[in-house]
Structures are given as structure tokens and as C-alpha cells.
Image (cartoon, rainbow over all chains, first blue to last red; front, side, top):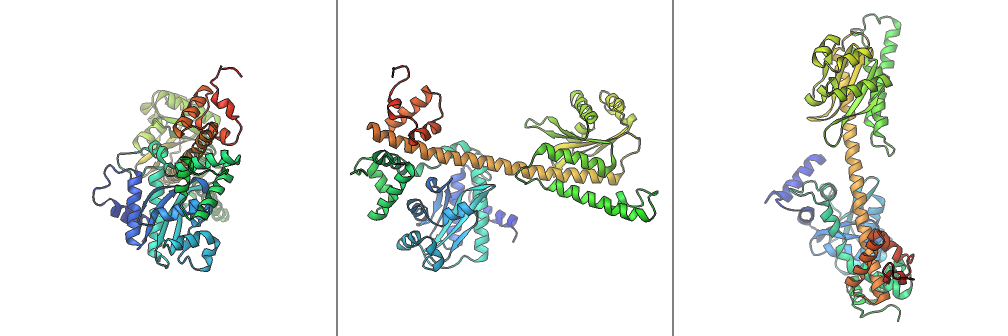
Length: 238
Length: 266
């Protein structure tokens, strides 16, 4: 099947109930994620926007592991989606216990610990760089079939065009609205990073590294620790 | 294509050299089409691109001069490239007089051809300028993608030899390849522009929140108070919020300066 027909089939699947009436880019992308979860037997699918390791933000997702994989990579500052974003090439990890996942030992261990066994990250490519990734994960090991991979790559293109062009987004071309909301899911982490930087008289990237280390050491989520910092229950200079 | 270089189009071109001429012409043609398709290079320049379309069409179609007009954002035509200065002036007259072959090809989406007599009756304001410039035959083809017309290519001859059907087809083919290339290039440029905006939004979100956290910590403020401080400072100093935030997180602005209203003394 060529990409044009594949695109038409996927679009039909995600808009068939109500022709996507009134749905913004976020809604359309959430439906794309559900489509991927259902068609490809995934435990999570998420669209992550980023301009670098420290700014990743989940725009929409589906499945119980949607937030997990994105969150882990942000917390750890490593993982396949960062590589897919940086290289513009898909990263396919059908088995996180296998050797090639050793490239991100912390990520692989953390993902396995929460029940993710396979992870696939597809770049949202825009010349000359990219705007993020479409991340797919499974709670069982196994490679995507050729058809599934082709569908996923077309879904990533549709998502990219929906974000950038508001293409397929009916009656709405509100890029400004999207830009205003993008990244809001990480606000507390950025604020905590600023506070830690002030407490330690450090750069913000070193402060973020400290926050990551504290997260890793505590076994809690980065978001929870950041919340404690912002609410002044934890300090880093004591 | 073979009709252009072939013996039917040039009956006097027989003999051992004609085959070699055909090959040479086909090579020129092939190179021109490759140039027209190559719009995705990082250093692409629309004026250079259309300049080479006009030069190539003069050579390949067999004209004396050519010019290319493109529709601007409001749908009006603008002269973008022309093969020589005489042509540039003539096309400016065409735009000023709001009549001429290029405008007709653009508005109708169809190829247009006229000799000197036709042009006097069809475009009474424009025709004398064409004749003064020494042109007798003129044609124009739309830069078209399916039904979407984005501009037009004008070709002029100093003689009264009409453009053959094959020559018009060739001009149309070049114009269409150019239109496809331009549209792709526009789509890519727009996309990378939007991608840049998106990334800037992500980055400024990060740095503004970090700066708020830093101010909250230094001055023992709530996040809301820190943001109010940041916003007021950016207004008072006429600075963009994200640039100010970069300076704060980079410690380029002493924290004492932030709590002072302007005009409050040292």
C-alpha cells in the first residue's frame, strides 16, 4: 500500500465517528495514538514535542504507558526518543532486555521495572531538524510488523502535519493556541530547576541533573520531587 | 520533445550534424528539467530559480526574451525574473496596464499566444510597448499545479514566427515543473518556519519557568509573584520575556536590579 492510501485509511479510521468536527490538533493526535494502541497491540502511544532533551512535552497520548515512557526519558535525560529526535532516524527496541537496549541502561531498567518491554520511537521530521517523536511501547517484547511500522510512520507524518499546519484539523488553525499550551505539563519541573539552581548557585542544566539524580536515588517521580521543591518541602542546599 | 529538435520542426536541419544537434538539445532540455526540479537545496533562492527558468525557456523553446511573474499573498502578480532588461521593462508595463499575455494566462489558467495584430486588439495599452521593444510574437503559459495557478511565464519573439504547438507544450511543461518545485519549496519553508516557532515556544516555556523558580527562591516569592515581577521588568525595560528569562537564569542581571522599579535610584 502506498503512503497516500495508507494516510487516507488512517485518517478515515480516526475521523469516522464524527468527521473530527471541532477537534483540535491535540484531539486528533490523541485519536491517532488510540488508533496505534488498538491496531498495534500497544500499551502506550504518545506524541512528544521537544526542542532538546530538557524541553520535551507530551502533547497527547493513549494507553496506560503513554505518560510512562515520555516521563522516564525526561526524568533520566536519556532514552530512545531523544536519539530518534536528534538523529531523525527511528529507534526500534523490540526487547528492552536485549543487548541493544544497553545503550540506555538506566532507561531500559526503569522501563522494564514499570512493565514496558518494547519501545519504538519515530521522529517527527521537519527539515532541517525535527519537532519531536511519536513513541510506541508494548508490555510484551516483539517487533512491529512491516505493516504496523509503515502505519506508525504515516501516523507520525499525520501528527506532524496536524501540529505544524493544523492539517486535518477542521475549522481550527490555532497554532498560537497550541504554542501557548505546549510544555505546560512540565512547568513544575522547570520551576523546581530554577529554584535548585538558585539554592546551589549552579547553572540550570546542573540543577536539572541534580533533580534527576535525586529522583533516581529516591525512587519517586520527578514530578513529585519537583512539587516538593516548589512548595518548599525539600531544599537542595541542606 | 523530439518534435522540437526533430526534422519535422526544422526541415532545413538535415545532414550529419542534425542528429548531433538533437542529442545536444535533448541534453540541454534534460539539464533544464533537473534544475527546475531541484528546489529543495538548502541554499535555494526563488529569484535565481525563476531567472534560470526564463533563461532556459528562451534557449529551449526558441524565443528572444522571457519573464516570469508570480502571484503574491494577495493574489496580485509580481514580476520576479526576466531574461533581459528590455523584458523587465515590458513586463512592468504589462503589470501597470493590467493587461497582456501573462495576466491572461494567469487569470485563465490557459496558454495564450498572439501576433502583433492580435495583441493590438486584445491588449491595446500593452501592445505598443511590446512593439516598441521590438517584439512581434508573444505567448504566455500558466505556472500551474492541477487547478492552482501560481504565476505565468511570458515568451517573446522578435520575428513573426508563431510558437508551434510543440513549443507551447514544452513551455507549459517547464512552467508546470517549476510550479511543482516552487510549491514543494514553499511547503517545506513554511514547515520549517513553523517548526522553529514551535521549538522557540518550547524553549521559552522552559526558561521562563526556570527564571520564575530562581526569582521565587532568591526573593522568597510565590510563583505568581515571581511572574508578575518578571513581566513588569520586561515591560519597564521593553524586553521580551523569554530573553529576560535567559539573562536571569544566566545571571546576567543581578537579582537586586530586578526588585528595583526604574527611576527608583541606584
